[in-house]
Image (cartoon, rainbow, N blue to C red; front, top):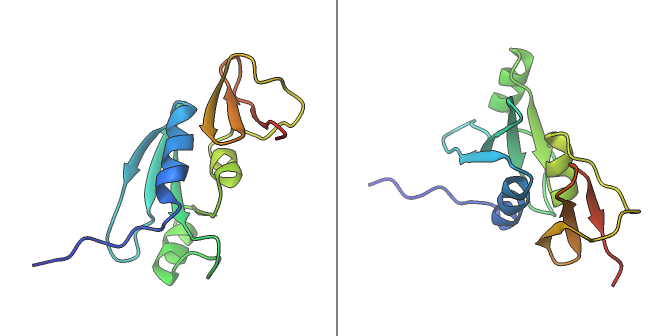
Length: 119
């Protein structure tokens, strides 16, 4: 019997943030397969989730897929994950009308901007 693949500890947080900006996220598994297939505004993005510590690169199999035209984005944090799908961080917006994707990090419901509220 095959055991379930081990998921990175920060993956759930990244998935919640991606879904908060309207992305559809599919968790993938298999040898040499990226962790997430993300679709936002009709654009597909392959994401390899890495813990905050450790190797910061895709596997050799993922590198081969990138060379064939299937680029894999290596992501460790929410800001990078959102940037991979075209949502960029802005520190000068007010939190009015925003969705909190993690403590202190908000996504504007008026635009695709992400901003952090100082504590």
